[in-house]
Image (cartoon, rainbow, N blue to C red; front, top):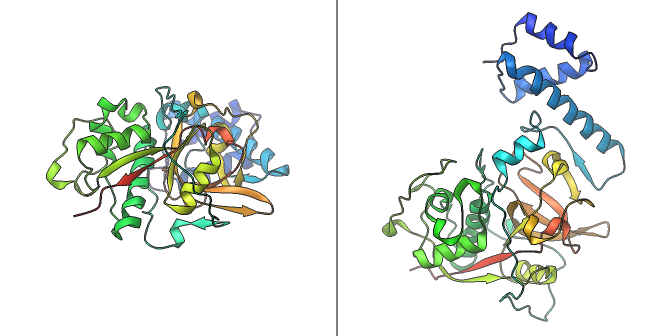
Length: 331
């Protein structure tokens, strides 16, 4: 309970001024504050209380109906979706389509399911981008980390902050957004990416401090999967390595906790994507095909930092702009 102080008069003022909220709902909020180490000013408290209870009611309504996925409270439950978008999603519009990609699918059989986390030390732990729209850097590093590990047997945790600080000449915008395909191009022509240990993540825009002598991961070529070719994505993940993708996050995704996410109201075109993530596998559950996806909102979100999303329908534009790097052999 350290740092959680709500003056008694403020509490009763909040209760009296918000008669539509029950004591039980307010108690949920107080418990959530303690669990998430939240502390508010007197001016902010009422707004956060209102937002939390509105979010919880939306979650409860969703879970009462027969849906393919569940929603729940998490560290973002005191935020409106508008506030969340401002801090965590890409702010600069990204038209990421590759109308003619350079991934060529094989015609041989593919595994019915695959999870690169289970095949060896090929995927780093889930990371947290914090209040910076740098998801594209985490999708980039996650994909290159896995590709390097699959080719060499060496798993490095690579530097997102280097991409935030240094990749602007490749049409990336630091904490305002970018694309993995463009970040792979930067790494290719920049001649490498440092480790996270040598170039630690700060979650804010900074000046470029790249030291070529410390680079450990290199890109030989960049592969873009043709726009909307979700079968090509399956081929790449099933045969080669995890794949970076981008899609449109809408308000219900923020509270995802389990199941296979789907949404009939999100957009599916490349100009509407606002979040980049990493497909580390795919599977089928009760006849529904899904992707296994690594997020960058920390291990407390979703399924230990991961989520499943429906596969085969270009759900929320996830097949609009997928890509992966071909790593240079390590020396």
